[in-house]
Amino acid sequence: MTPEESVAALAARLAIPERERDEAFALQVERRIDIEMAERAAAAARRETLFVELAAAAALLFAGRQLLASGTDAARVVLPLLEAVSGPAMLIATLALLLVLLAADLPGRTRHG
Image (cartoon, rainbow, N blue to C red; front, side, top):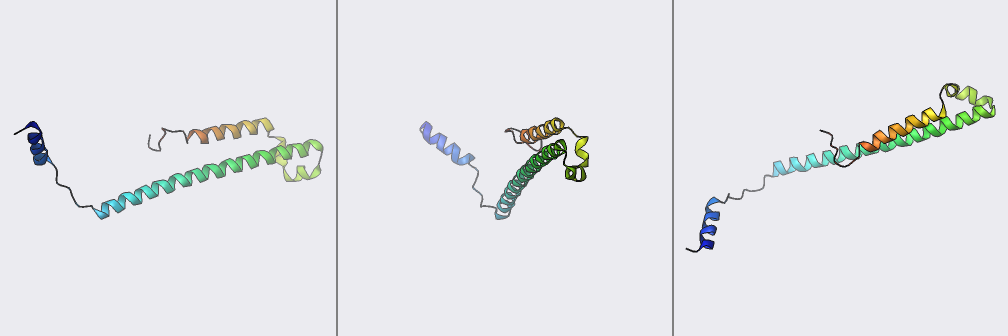
């Protein structure tokens, strides 16, 4: 018996017989993959929506402060809280939240650790 034949015989003896495909298990795995992909897409959509809302809020705050600075009475009726909030403070808060959201998308970070 040549070494190749003995290796082939040993491999045949130790080989695990191939099992039939477990359709129920395969369906569970495919369903779980679909669920995880949907969760990731939903999280990305939430982050995008939050970013758009923050940008819109920052633009509104800036516009409101500009209206207040120009002496428009309508701005004092519509945006009374803007006098207490500084524009740079809102910009810094918006940028900090944006950095946190972007850091969540960095490669290598997982939801579980």
